[in-house]
Image (cartoon, rainbow, N blue to C red; front, side, top):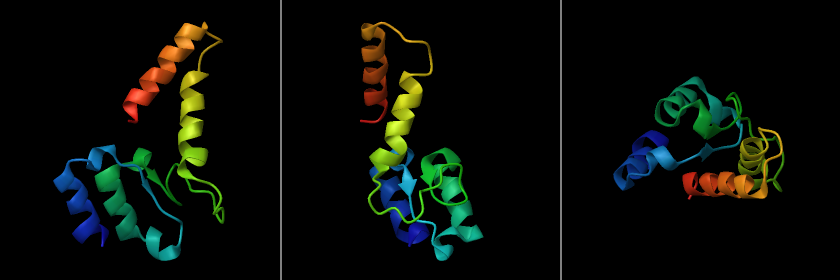
Length: 101
């Protein structure tokens, strides 16, 4: 389904490079062929799944992608330096918003 439908549809719409692919870690979803396909089209940095650098938290139906991944990314980018003036923090947040809109 990924190879024959999902990825071609994303390519046709021109948004494949903007997608963060997230899946649970069920055994059929992480077999070698699926992982190779995901790495080829999304790279490790844009896949949230078991056996990838960003592993989805197991058995957590209450966790949303924003809670799990995006919030951590924003905090890492905003607080990676010493405390800055409020104007600098606003600029960093604005740049992050432009990247992920």
